[in-house]
Image 1 (cartoon, rainbow, N blue to C red):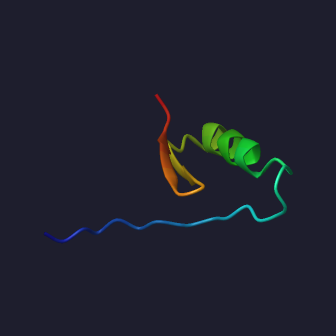
Image 2: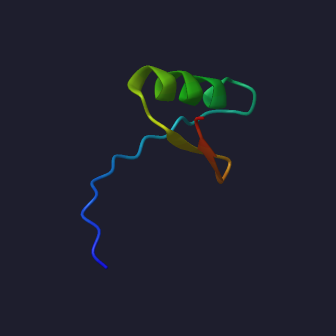
Length: 46
């Protein structure tokens, strides 16, 4: 099976407690992104 999906990967980097997860969810909602990975967990918007 061959997949021809192009994907861009972005990372929010910084110390613990600085809002990286919150910002990732905000950006995903604004851009219509249905999946993000946070601390190794795949999170799907319902």
